[in-house]
Image (cartoon, rainbow, N blue to C red):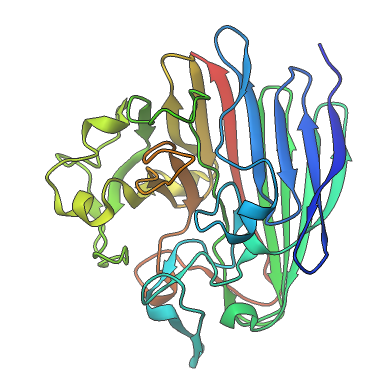
Length: 347
């Protein structure tokens, strides 16, 4: 058994000369997670297959430059608001706010320069049982159009049972909206020339959120029963990915938010992924009300379309404009807290 460790190296520098560091978290079993201070991006996550061969199971790059312009948000911390806000507008306490428009007519993942494009301050934390990296960032009042100075902390913790925990915390000095998530693209085979259509997925949700052609919620909460969106029991991703269904056509595959069961329980199982060839098994647990399941329908070279899947735990899209959805409002004096865990094993 190895000793758990955190090591650091220089990853690169931004065009304006800011240094970007890489932190490698390694647990006692040899599982490794590489995180850079630019965007809090997980660039690599190495876990064993059934032959105990360690391979990277998340899409990413080996250098900084592609991340600077990357439109796919590989591995990044997403904020201030994960997912879409319709027309880039919302109002709070009678004040109207306009955000950067960066996805058709809408705002996606925090605007032109979201949390995926900023440099975070990093501090490694080592205990007997775990290794962790604390990342902090101050998002200033009206950054990308969002109100309030938002103090954000994200802690990545790698445990001795091959679990990566992601803890989010934030405070604000002015009423604002917040919806943080982690945007890793998983391919549990470790072979990024392969599509993920044969991987099997379970999503612990009896309902999902239909969207219009621009991926904005219609407002309906729809039952998954009898639809391609029923993942209540494990099935292959490819089984219904091209089904003759208006919602599948809207997303060219899966790109929807599922309404997770039992929100009152807090941290609970949200989804599982299994790659039969490698034996790798992933369990995603969260205290969030939803998960965006995205099948990377438009990936470009060097990757392949549908060459990965995302399970972005979060509140629902466009919640600031939907009174019927769980609130994403954060007030001064309150603490935003959220946790998601990614547990790897062999099955």
